[in-house]
Amino acid sequence: MSFKSEFLNTLDQRGFIAQGTNLEGLDEKAAASVLTGYIGFDATAKSLHAGSLIQIMLLYWLQQTGHRPIALMGGGTTKVGDPSGKDTQRTLLSDAEIDENIASIKGVFEQFLNFGDGPQEAMMVNNDDWLSKLGYVEFLRDYGVHFTINRMLTFDSVKLRLDRESPLTFLEFNYMLMQAYDFHALYNRIGCTLQLGGSDQWGNIVNGVELCRRKDRVEVFGLTTPLLTTASGKKMGKTEAGAVWLNADMFSPYDYWQYWRNVEDADVATMLARFTTMPMDEVRRLGALEGAEINDAKKILASEATAMLHGREAAARAAATAQETFEKGGAGGDLPTIQLSGADIKAGAAIIDQFLTAGLCASKGEARRHIKAGALKINDQPVGEERTLAPGDIIDGAVKLSIGKKKHAIINIV
Image (cartoon, rainbow, N blue to C red; front, top):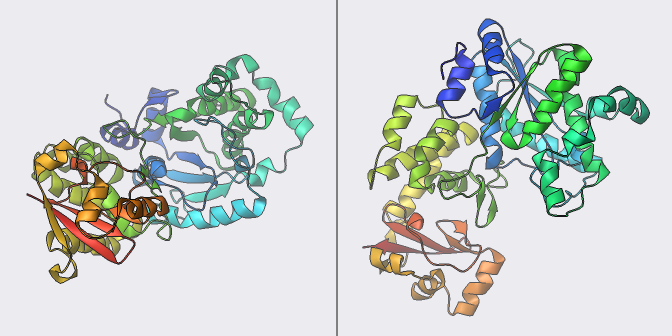
């Protein structure tokens, strides 16, 4: 599809668009004026994880194409909890915990966005500023009248819980009204006319668009991105050991580099398009590489994605560390080394057995205890459960084995 605006053209070329409330109208507005658009982020942890990156990149491209991005922190909505994609109610946090999380998260946005008071400079706002001031009776009277239970029951976030006979509290049910009110509040406070989000937020976004139409007599817009999964169907932003956090103190730049270096071959082009700023011609060229050459594309992906978040110097250090470890053997070549063939990998070489062969563990029982403690690692990533080595574990013809931070060995694939 061809768009007039640089904003939608960029999103379309890079695979960011799932659906919109009125893409043609949004395109006209984006081509003719400066848009203000926002995405909401609930402060449920001290860091966002890599699954949030697609939304952060949306705000990045919104600003890069001449518009104003708003990172809306859910200081108010976090007190309720978004039921989208959840089988159970989220753990409720205290006000102090939420404030601490917001302060911790802000630094990530500062790596991607330019904040300030200018017409195209980013803003960070907190919906607790208005939600905490709402009177309950007045809110129900003035805004509840615009929502029907019939329609709300059709939303996927609600149907999922009801179909599985999981409790859905009235508290969570109100989340949809609160998120819709956010759009109304942002329109009236700063002229925001665009809400962006993942496709799981479509119902909530439509609610906000409809509320603005009814209360403010104005057309505002909603746009969603595809939910990002890997080629094998896994959810973006997690490893066997848990979440890929964006804060450096929770997930190191080196581990972050390795996360991107280890993506599946089939995901390279998609990841380059969405999580780097490389020209699309180069993205397509790198994504088309095959065999051993695809590893070069993965290294570029890892370095570019890491540079976006942690800076170019941190990315270079991570790449150098990986090269030292995997291509030069690390530690001056003194690491213990064992050999496996590609046929061994295909036949199902148990990870635990390799740790015994390399002398890193004295018994399978010891290896299992290290797995449980999160100390047994493949390529510096904790192994979450007993399994066999997979082709994706091989980096530049080798697999790094580690127990904790000081015991290492290398498997050379011959």
